[in-house]
Image 1 (cartoon, rainbow, N blue to C red):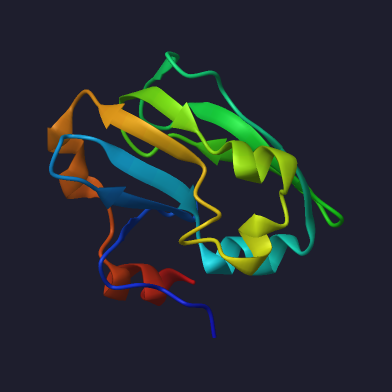
Image 2: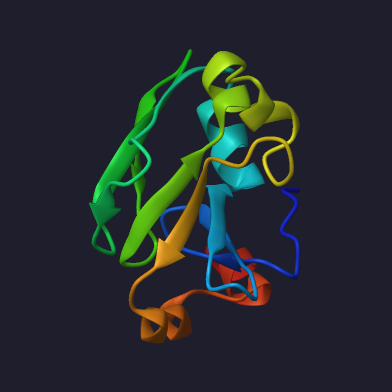
Length: 126
């Protein structure tokens, strides 16, 4: 059974979002996503400063089984990418919710947060 931390929000595309009090958020892929992909070998990241709309493709995760697009969960500007995952993509497999985060973002439309899924709803779709 996949881990689904209660404190996070989720998308149907298997990204997780942790909102912070300073109007920033951290984004990653869920445990279910990494289990489905298998051994992750490469992550294509956007650059800090890039802006995306909700649903835009912001990168790709490649594994021994498949390549999967990553989708921005909210309209946002990228503040930081996780260089550790860039050099050690296997962190997405071993620790998707802590060391394996992908992006720090600044959401530009906080009303979109209401459309994100709570943990119990996400569990119902996986």
